[in-house]
Image 1 (cartoon, rainbow, N blue to C red):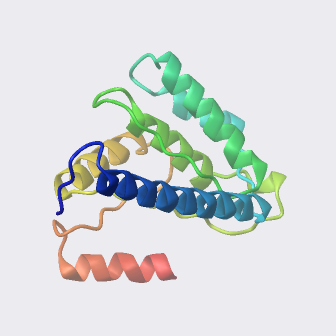
Image 2: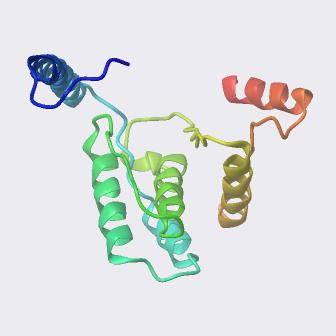
Length: 171
C-alpha cells in the first residue's frame, strides 16, 4: 500500500482514479439492473389459506420493518421479474422469518393460478457451518407442518447423504 499526504497531487490523483472506477462500476450495475428488469421470471402467488396458516404459526409479533419487507417481497414475487433484494438487520430482528416466508411462497406456489407446472426448490445459503445448522433446525421446526421437505448440505452431513440429496435435487 502506498501512502499519500492529504492535500498533495498524488492524493488528488488517487481519489480521481477511484471516483472514475466507482462511476464505471455504478454504470455497469445500472445496466445489469435494467437488463434484469426486462427478463421474465416465474410468478409466485401465495396460496392464501396455506400461507395465512404458515404466517399465523410465527411465535413472535412482527416488527414494522419485518412487515414492510415481507410485503415488498410478496409484491416482488408476483411481478414476474427476477428479484433483487438484500435484507439487512441486526441479529435477532427477524431476517430468517422474512426468508422463511419467501421460501414458503415459492415452494408452495399456487400453480392453479399460473401456467407453471414445475416443482419449485428453495436453497438458503449460509456463510458458516454453524449458521447453516442453525437455519436448518429453524427451518425444519417452522416447516414441519407444511408438507415441505427441509434438508441440510454442509460438512456436518455425511458424503453419502450429501450425494443422495444432490441427486434428488437434480431429479
